[in-house]
Length: 445
Ligand code: GAP
Image 1 (tube, rainbow, N blue to C red):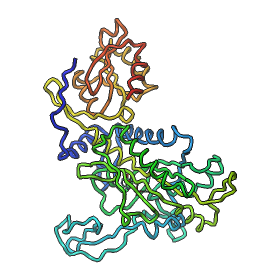
Image 2: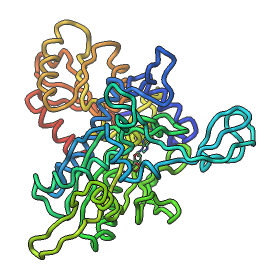
Image 3: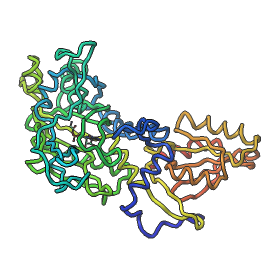
């Protein structure tokens, strides 16, 4: 028997953002970067719980996109790149936002996002728009001349294109096949906003899927369905998720068709992932610029062609924020309101918390034995502070699906209590069946 009362209404969108941002800071998910120096605008650090969750998001993506497939391999390419790469990819010429300056307060804004007056001072007198390139430029080596110019990558995708031949030759893959990468990207966003939704430094999870040219549209449809399902499987409710096809005037410079997976953020529908049909744009551009032959020779047909590319491009940090927003819930236990993150067990920072019922020394050896039994298999927390009820609430608030409590009876019967986060149901489990029981629950989830 449990006494959980679901809140009559889902947590209102209004105020949700503040609650999740507050929880993220209070419980060590996400901190403002360089906070003791007043913070550095639009950069964030991931704390002890956040780093676990972000890794889990990236691992869940890698598992679905690489581990469970035989047609996708991974790489980890450099963040720094020479201008030649970005000239060929079109980013030097096209990766720009239209920037206007408010003549009253001199703040700068993206013209396409401005809705009338200056959000800073209310002024309505703006300069003409000029193109502002979003790439961060730096210099490699001790001399700051043109020859030493380098760029921080604004997307991970180009690492896959410039390594196309290396991967083809070393893996003997043939189209359709994909190259996946997870890593940091950098964009000098004019208006970073909404917590980690749009930042200047962020992480992407991208895959370039190389297909015979006439199969592009079919594989585009395939990846739209696959990627949508990934978010649903990890717990985003379908009424908060949609696919939206871009209008022709929205398309990026390389795209013959893009659809976004969108999430219903507190401010409205916004992008989680773009799934583009990049055609042969990138391979042809790099082939022309580098002089290398970036194509595929099919020995069975004797045909040589430049593959077309379908690209599911997701943001790890942005997606983590969506998972937090979707998971946030409140309910009542025994008349007391609790915040609970209903995170999928695969995403929760800790899967299990081991809680000795009291601080009494007699319980510690067995509690540590339980911890050491579970640690090789699950990310575990160990907490002896406060009352057991308080500790359950603290674990609920950070999304831990299962608490394992060691009490004085455990010393006699070598059994522990397993408590479920969502139902708050508690069952007694013998120690020698505990690992199997938790594995079964995690596997069922
Ligand atoms: N290679 C294609 C590409 O980079 P994109 O739509 O510009 O496409 C893909 O980026 C994803 O990366 C976005 O859907 C978003 O999740 C994430 N992303 C892009 N810019 C971001 C930013 N400034 N902050 C956080 N995430 C960002």
